[in-house]
Image (cartoon, rainbow over all chains, first blue to last red; front, side, top):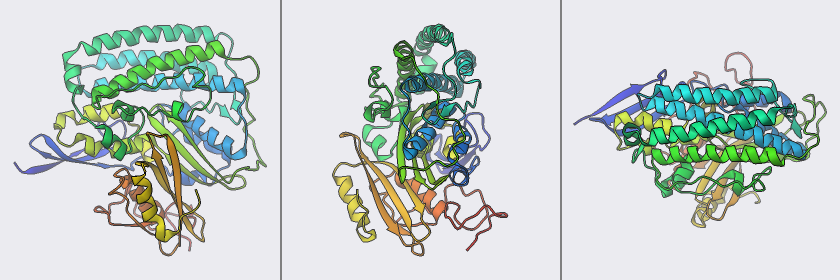
Amino acid sequence: MSETKINIGPIHPSTHGVLRLVVTVDGDTIKEVEPHIGFLHRGVEKLAESRMYMQNIVYMEKLDYAAPMAHQELYVSTVEKLLGIEVKERAEYVRVVLLELQRIASHLLWLGTMCNDIGQMFSMFMWTMRDRDMILRLLQEATGQRMFYVNMRLGGVNRDLPAGFEDDTYKVLDSIEHSLGEYKDFLESNPVFMERLKNVGVLSRENAIRLGVTGPVLRGSGIDYDVRRNSSYYKYTKLGFRPAVETGGDSFARYKVRMKEMQESISLVRKALEEMPKGDALGLPIKLIGAVPKEKEAIVKRELPRGEGMMYMVADKQRPYRLAIRAPAFINLAALDHISRGQRLADLFAILGSLDLVMADVDK
Amino acid sequence: MPKIEYANLDAEIEKLHSEGFTYLTKITAVDYVDHVEVLYFLRDIEKNKEIVVRSDLAPNYLRLKSIMHLYPAADWYERELSEMFGIDFIGRKTKRLLLEKWDGKGNPLRKSFTWGSKYEVQE
């Protein structure tokens, strides 16, 4: 048969934002996928050069609207390293709690949308959104905002955890842990779900390294690399963090990695709340006129929900001279062409769903 | 790691790749007006080691050899740098820009590019 080109997107329910895919098919076998990105480009890197260090924090949250907390923490840590500011001990625990709650929320959103992508399971989406909402309420309790928190400050956080937050969190975590078990039983005994994920979009160990994929996609291909352990930050080693690794390399392995990660995050939050020391967690006020950078440049990397994020910042006096962002979704999308070659066209969105993309992160 | 001479850059990256630095984290560049610094973030996943390879380019001769044959991950980073800094990568099959959604001239992340009227370039 001859080859045909099919255009998908830019507006399509399963592309999680504005992404255009030009797919070359032979019959319904995919020969090539060419992603066209940039519909959501805001020029964040250039914008950051014209704003003062702490003014940029609001832009960084919008890099990933499904996990804003993680991105603002990455940015604030970069500035902290540049200005030579130490994080208070209690603040480290507070940040771990907030970051891991955000990771669970982000993964729940992914689970719902992926089940949606592979068809038929809209009820999963409703259930995971219900669970995610409980976490958003917790984060609202802790930061005052529901979606864009602007909560990280140099050396700490804007608000300490409020009274009663711990009890509320334990309740929510118990409830989510229970539902996760249910989802797992329900999904893994569902033949449609298994058929659509097992042996679909296989990425081998060697190719995962060559293509530079990151986060759950990398760990789903059997590579034991997690920034939280490999370049340990905050108290992750002390809290007994273990990365989730699967060797399958297919969409199902990526699903399992994220399910295990949610479980791991739940125990991390519990442990961090138990071991949290008393004291001051508040950071410096956001007005930081006259800040003098101690370093010439800073490189900071963090394990974001979508994978490894990195920021490289070169200092000027009051504002960044250059801010380079490594977006995890960007490099995972770049691997889509390789992963989906030879698969059926109908499986394209099962693969795309298992990569967990946020287009705002890809386009910057 | 000290800066690599522009002429030795390709050989150095090839050497590091054969030594086990097979994972590319990012390629980026910084415009210092009198020169453009390019940075390759390489990693050895097994040994958990990282290295940053730097080199200076003359602003009127922005050319690099593509490293896609060693690191397929470099594809989108090279396209991004072509678009944002105007760096020409030699030895690439596709020259398509990455975002390609704008009609303007100039390279947005160069310091000569300003926020003037629509895509105005100040030389």
